[in-house]
Amino acid sequence: MAARTPVLETFPALRAWQRKALVEYLRRRTEDFTAVATPGAGKTTFALRIAAELLGDGTVEAVTVVAPTEHLKNQWSEAAARVGIQLDAAFRNADLHSAADFHGAVVTYAQVGMAPQVHRRRTMTRRTLVILDEIHHAGDSRSWGDGVKNAFEPAVRRLMLTGTPFRSDDNPIPFVSYERGGDGLLRSRADSVYGYSDALRDGVVRPVLFLAYSGETRWRTNAGEELAARLGEPMTQDLVAQAWRTALDPAGDWMPQVLRAADARLTVLRNAGMADAGGLIIATDQQTARSYAKLIEQVTGEKAAVVLSDDQGASARIATFAASDQRWLVAVRMVSEGVDIPRLAVGVYATSASTPLYFAQAIGRFVRARRPGETASVFLPSVPHLLGLASEMETERDHVLGKPKESDGFDDDLLERAQRDDQASGELEKRFAALSATAELDQVIFDGASFGTAAQAGTPEEEEYLGLPGLLTADQVSLLLTKRQAAQLAAQRRRSADGAAQPAAAPTAAPPAPLSAAQRRVALRRQLNALVAARHHRTGQPHGKIHAELRRLCGGPPSAQATIEQLEERIATVQTL
Image 1 (tube, helix red, strand yellow):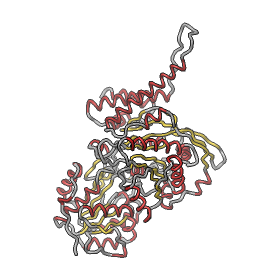
Image 2: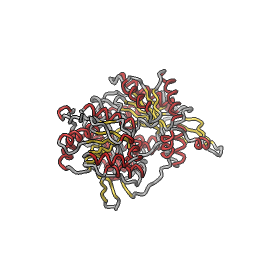
Image 3: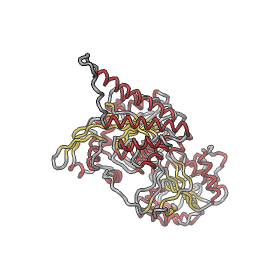
């Protein structure tokens, strides 16, 4: 029996961006269409609606979805079935064709790369719409890219989807359009773009608070030399990477202290109305993931779910966690992209990955909104590169071909090996030994701005930030963070005044001590945030866009990383806007 044509009236109501993109798609009727939409915006619903439209009017007879992982194959098949589109998630290359009662199949990029001729024959047999989910994966290897191009060139229609920044390498992505800019470089061009700032304004995604933790770290090099550094302070890239790795060591004090803080934040969210809120710890490899799970059990008294690799049992464990009210999930790879667990609201970024692509994939797990006012909180090391990515959540990145690449000195290659082999690098362990690490809350980043001053873990100052209400609008988050920062600074001034109070021994008071560089930076950040907030209320522009405009005019990194001189220049500039 042939598969029935899906009924459009049974589809859920589309969001504004989905309707706009659908109208644009139906107006153009071109072979290729690229849609970029932030995680949680509803790319799957949008793509399935297009599939239903094209099946209904006879433009196509079949649908093929290409997804990054086996778990996402099942997720796509289940979502499609709910709207009357039957997709075979169990299709294997040896099958050659799906049963007649399916509209098509869901396959992985790896599957296509192994046997592109099989999928080319399937595509040529029936007029086919191909949906390429997270299309940047087609550039993961030459075999994948060539396989996708060879297999799906005969398709009547191709719909490319992505929710994260495009790749940072020079591997062209099949079927994506590139245009040459004034600098001579080729840049990817999307036909529909719906960014995080747009989704935040529309209430489609949650506001994300980034709680950055610094601290003292000590480690021993392969030469037997012991080094110490404060996480987050300016230093060479090699030292940053080693201090970062030391902080993430399960045997140190940094991770237990951060996990306690993250679990306290999770409790606040659960008590504030998100009763089933869950937390996710993203680890670099299997060994540390298991160690983090033991730490969570020690901190909370409750076992964490652990997902270590892309296997059959992992999908089942993810599904079980998503449907439960279990507090914590620890994962290496499986929950970094596309996996839908809407109740995830607290994250711990405990991996050495540093690419914008991976960071966006990871943060995308926490932004999916279920009802108005929900917020997400992500705990991360106070590493300048990560702070920059956190401050640039709203930045839209195109794929640029031919741009000179600069190594950031971090462990992305190690992460790739860990994800591929699911084991730590033994050679690395021989060269390096973490000795100790302590944690303190360095700053809170929201909407491109930095709030707060250093607060030791376990102190009332830290609890003030961990206790922020869980149900807030984006504007309320900014206002409350500004108030908390002002209260924190006022309390510090009172303590300084009390400590300096002495019996009158001289007729003249000593002049106030000069501010340290750290204190000046905090004061300038506070002043800049206040001026940006004032401009936001005058113009309605989001805080992040105002900060981005100041960076464009003045240059330099996000305010979380800016120097004193850069902050002073931005303050002077915003006062003239």
